[in-house]
Length: 449
Image: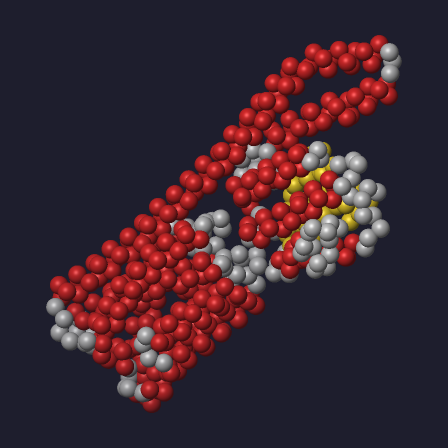
């Protein structure tokens, strides 16, 4: 025990390097906590296996690089490698992975400043010993990580959710990253200078530096918050414009239906007087019902029901395309779109592919019909998106539709369903079922939650 205490309380490069690994593990746990708590990493797709692999690889790389490389090279290598591991193992986008790492660095720098002030102004231990003695190094790092954790928790409590929308433009992302990098560029070199130049630095200068750091961090946080607000407002305006167009179409359809109602009633009366039931059925099924369905569909396509701007825009766009091709479209939606248990970017890509295929297939038929039914199966815990459409290629093997390059139309590239299957391979909780019955081709996407 005495020998161990002596090893920990005296300069020993080997022991110093050994404790670098558990400290790096704690650091990686904090970074992953930021990804999950602040950036809402896809926990449905984040298996415990991936999480353990991330912690293991990130810890090994981070600690080893710090041991064998000096500042600033170890900082650059660690930033790049850890960001790559976040992307592939924690399933965050490139933008969010970089941003998560940047936020940790800013929190870490401010925490280091706080510990630096405490050590420089107290007689407990010198800053030089805190950087060279294994035990003191471990205690100072644990104190820093504790402060970082408090910062993360405060951000959560203040509802500082940085779960940026996936439809954020590239320019907006670049501006935000530039803002964060600017804070790091200002903070980190300053901190390194203070640590390396361990001298009698005046107290007022240290206090001035930490106030500058906090100010920069607050500016970055405020800018990020305003950026989120502006992006959300922009998306809301775009959704409102689309909804206004839908309302105008709905008003026009109601006016037309009301104007023609007298003629419709007279026509029905004529069929009734002649006792022409077959003609009446034909008139209702191929005329009146179509008009009613059109009005019902327009009523169902609105932001209060389809409460996700990208999905609302997608469904409205595909609906208008189908209508322009004289396709009869039926939409039934019983679902809260904000709770889709799948990355929204991947979901909209797959939904767009399925709708495009349904429109293309149905447009070639004599009877052009598409039925979209969106619901939730609470018993089996499934979110269900079913698209049923008429089609003409009834003799083809269903599996061929999922092959790369296969297409029923010469001008198409034939990568739609093939691309969809590649997206689905990333998810353990999402399945696509394809069936054919009579004249209908059905695609059913099931998302387990």
